[in-house]
Image (tube, rainbow, N blue to C red; front, side, top):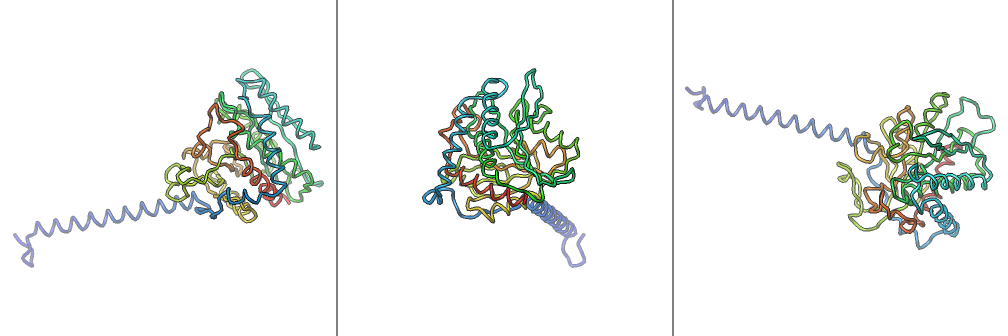
Length: 352
């Protein structure tokens, strides 16, 4: 049996089947490529960063940055030279008192949010800067850091750096007279395990209180590990697939948002990069990707608030992460001072 043109029918059938399979495979490849493209568009706000490594500015550090670096060092040394969490309760209380005493010295009235976890009293610590005519309808921006350390780690970078930066932001913002937003500066307890991602997490308690009151939160920023940088190629790792997009040198900070926070993350990252010299990337990705939701922004996301963290990417760069040698001497204070100064300008833009 042959086809009309003399070609055996079986060969014609095989050729047609191969063509059909090739068409199907091509369609699947295009669909997969489209899905990857869509996922990356969903996940990435700014897939590139400016070519400005942190070390480039160290030779021309401003005098006020040098003073700021020393102040940051003093906070981190005072808070994060020893482990401080519920398992090390006396040190946790000492860290809380350092925060409260410092804020009082800046002229603020602190507002504690006290609750019981594992049978002991712990507290979030907050100050509020609001417009004179603030009402229940005034929108709120939140910025802060958790002050507990993990396990037996002193937590100089995680999260002494975030606490120190937040304290110095409070000092730098003493003259702030916001017109459009209420600013809540918060120091949260119990971010680390076993309390993280549970109702005993300090930021979860704070977010729930705001949700119960109906307060309109338009954005939340968690400062999380901001003191470790390297100009060595290969010093930066990423969870898949971000390593194919972002650079492999750990000399930047990242603005990391969860789904629902794309607009806020986009706005904050663009505002920071517009006014700052420190390199930064920004992105939004789902929490199942390792590292994306490992901070207090997770808690606010649970209540539907736009939330992000600012981070040096912690375990993807820092060999001291969650270790007993995460000590004050491992922190890059010059870079932390630059970041803190440039975050001040960002906050002013967000609330004025």
